[in-house]
Length: 401
Image (cartoon, rainbow, N blue to C red; front, side):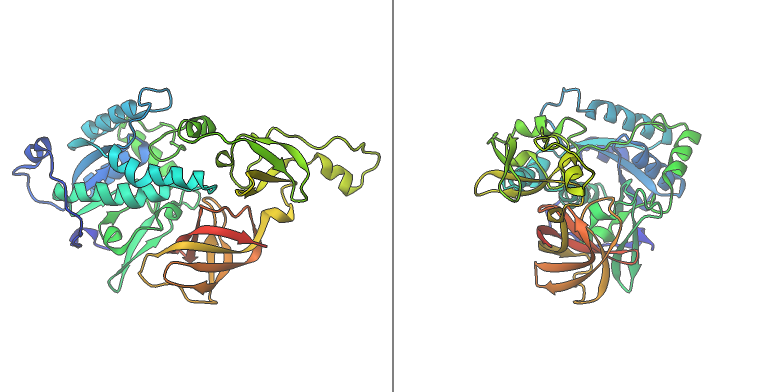
């Protein structure tokens, strides 16, 4: 696909480029211009390097999207900016820092908190991609005269008969198409993912060979732009604690919780309860051994402020053979076919699960699986695939056995 020839008008008003950037770009020879989102990490750094070597006019853009507790030990934005500037200097490209903290808080973080307060478990990285990296960032890049933007995501874009498809990355262990499934045609038409056909090991080797300072830098695994921090402690700064009971599906009281917002389906750690020990084991019967299996969060009873917990990873309450989902988004603009065999993920890094879409409307869908899925979680996304092509997805409302 020749991304640099795409010209897709966007409806939003575009921000103006800074005077500093206009000076940097004035009278520059006109090559296909790509603005690269540079986070200070190795992936986005190699993205910029590869595009520069391919002959593009590359501009780096460092996004600052979080300002709360910016000086805490968990926020690495200062060091990330230093790394991004160092890489830009090594590569020989201009770089600009832009602040999207207000947009992030209004479009992503406020929704994130509402979902948790409602008892669901949202995925802020998905909304961040749709609203910040491929909207606010894209608008700013176009104001800089960009033909396309590029990021260090592990995914691919392909144009077929005028439609843009989102494909899985070659490195399946790093594939990030799950997080990009809410992108639309206008956004994909402007996007480049140069790392889509590379392995992570190759990327680090390229960075080291070219003297990039961050070739061995640890990958970030925290919430998009918020960083890696104790999540319960972080969330408690924004949501009130409403303690309540932990009960089994049969109604037995087994503990107390600190607030339903602070737990997610399938959670094992941090429950504060161990195996039941009131029964003395005198034989090796399965029901006796089960008394000492670990506990998992199975459901939230919002009406009664109760956390429902079960023992055993494969407890039937944790399994769902079908689900309903809302707020559907299909990348091509066309919904998938009913009763056709697809594959789906109900969480990132999950293996593809064969499924069929049994019901679909403008914004809602129902999906049935060949094999029951574990801990299908309201607020997470179900993402559909046809082979290597990501079709889109929807926000899980509920799973049913």
